[in-house]
Length: 219
Ligand code: CA
Image (cartoon, rainbow, N blue to C red; front, side, top):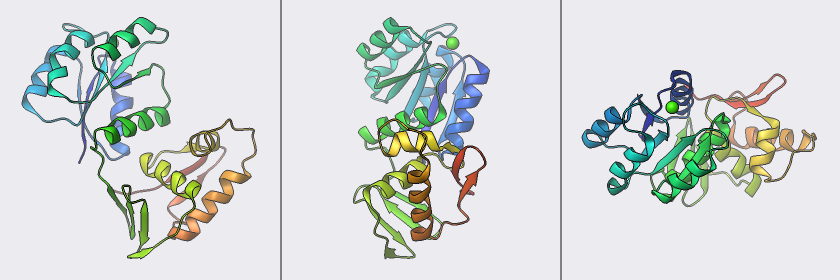
């Protein structure tokens, strides 16, 4: 299981990160000070660190200098409009940053991208009788290959990266079609129907009233 260390002293944000990442299938530890985080990275193995800049004691930048030699991917959490912080974080070797307040879908996408870059993703994802090999992009159901179009495959990955999280149609459209949502939900709905049918996920991908869809995965 992928292990993520969250270093954030604002409890509501730390809780939100913890909840969202845990729901997405990651294992998380939360710490609220730079000193505690420095101890933790010395003792345990982490696949990724989400690091707040403003922390009591050692701040995120000082901690970054400490953890950079360990070659653990780092995503900085910065305050809105702190452009200097973003640049400094990236110069110190961070892989990416997210700006508070952030959308959960954006956070999960950035986490997945950084993990992929470090080849830390598990290339085989199993949900019920469906297996997805993200390296070969082969999807099988009950051992038999399921042919998916490129958009269906992208939609499936988006759901898998956001397990148990309600995704807005708008978010789905922008992530899968990579263009602005113009309010026409038929494209998204059609692709969701097709994916449900191909994978036998009529019960698993549920419609969320006035929002969009959610992939239900009980751990
Ligand atoms: Ca802070």
